[in-house]
Image 1 (cartoon, rainbow, N blue to C red):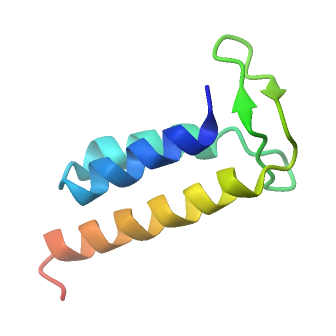
Image 2 (image 1 turned 60 degrees about the vertical axis):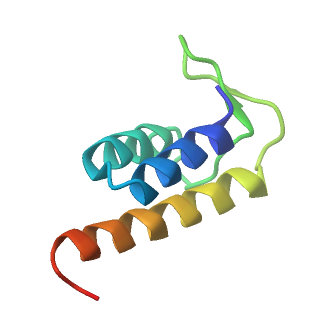
Length: 81
């Protein structure tokens, strides 16, 4: 599983108003962080082993963008501007 793609999915779900699915997807991806909060490029889907480049800046960027999209979507749903 490529973590950046997981975070892209979470962002897309948030942008289309699917807030609950976006949150679950984001949390699932974020759960693969190390104790230092670092992400690899990929995660083995069965074992959870971190694979590929480490640390991977694009995975971190994807997390930040998805989290912002989710926060914006939640604010919109709650009637915020």
